[in-house]
Image (tube, rainbow, N blue to C red; front, side, top):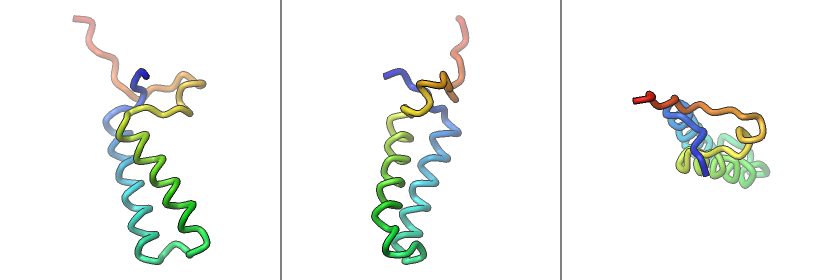
Length: 70
């Protein structure tokens, strides 16, 4: 897998996953949606950890910086 998630995108994904998990754990998210929100937070966290987003691939999107041609 070629990485397609850059540093800023990665930090934003991990922060969003943590925020969703905290909101759900604190009871701010309704109980009937809690499992769904935990799953979404887990997926967001995994894409941030592995630096690969499968939804970016078909569209050719990459937030990684290009390496210098040295």
